[in-house]
Image (cartoon, rainbow, N blue to C red; front, top):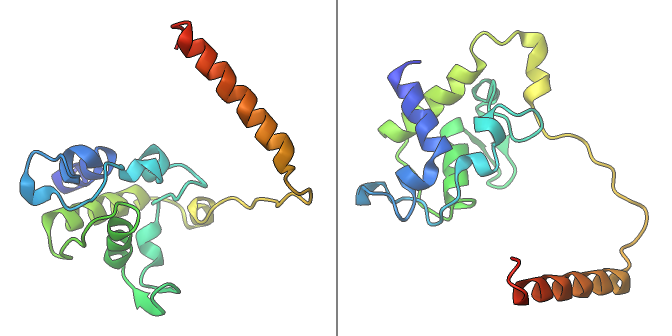
Amino acid sequence: MPSDVKYGYQLIAKSPKYMEPMAEDPDMRYAGNNLACVNCHLKAGTQVGAASWISVTDRFPQFRGRSNSEGTIEDRINGCMQRSMDGDKRPVLSREMKSIVAYMEWLGEGLPKEREKEFKDFPKISIPEVAVDLEKEKHCLLKNVAFALAKMERGND
């Protein structure tokens, strides 16, 4: 694995260690919380149906409805940094940005074109036609809270 790809993997897999408020290097504290990229992008961006990064760079530039503009993969990464991670944009030419993009590109290397769709988007869900019964849910919640409190009082947490 090339060194830039490895560094990109380390950044996304162990985000709190490398780029969060408690990072050892104060210059690397550009995220505002301790989320890791892998909290959303499961299995380091390789899980089908979980915001996979496999071949994601091939889908950029793309139109972004939120900004009503065309954006690059770097723009998308910075969007995550600002919103999900409550932080600041990374310079597009920074080592960190280049390494994260290198990791994403590496994930898609050699993937047959016919498999690309497999890693794109989220699974379709069906919305239930039955409305939530708030009284039933309230009763269930109160019962579980009472059970947990009793368990804690007995010292069985």
